[in-house]
Image (cartoon, rainbow, N blue to C red):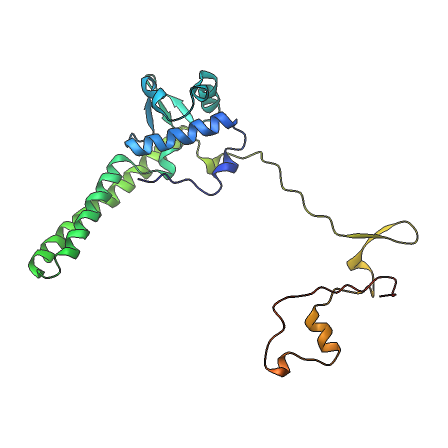
Length: 224
């Protein structure tokens, strides 16, 4: 059994403390392994594989405030569990479907048995599709009631990465000007271009330029 998380999962959880992030992720894998559909009995919270200090009530309250956990009385419910994880019914239906497909492969020499198994395969596949639709229906109902805080619905406050500033040169008047804005400023040229300037064309010799690309930058004062 595998636990799936989207590639933007860390960004969506950016505002959580390290302890809350760890507890939520460990609880998700715990529920997925035991097929609890995202439900953790409060009496069994100690079974979630994290250090005891990570299961403190203050950490649980942080997850509730973030909309990731819901207090169900005698249990905690992971609000976003069914967004990426399958239900127990879905897992069991998929296992049955895969088992039938395996039996079909082993029955290659028995056309009559294969035909019978094909019927079972169609029924099992329909069951898999039905369980997927049931999960989507549950998500839709919870979303309409405001009980699902999915990662995609929560806005992360992660700061935007800094943009690299263009290289600047100081002019004679003390103002800074981007090098690409200087008319006639020498540009970087590849080693292959330098060889062509000198009359050596690699393409004409039947092979491409060398594997390396030596950057040659003429000096701005014209002395190089």
